[in-house]
Length: 59
Image (cartoon, rainbow, N blue to C red; front, side):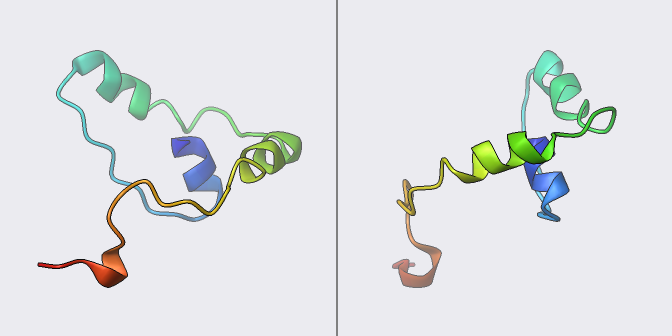
């Protein structure tokens, strides 16, 4: 998903406390997803929110 974000121009700041995950998160610059892979991931979107809606959040 980090690579998909990068190719879509989406700024993402990943967080982890585990060293191996930090290394994995930084390993997105030595490959690209194909157009077909990008389209397959795009096709997963079902327009369902799984967390709070930032436009309607009660602070």
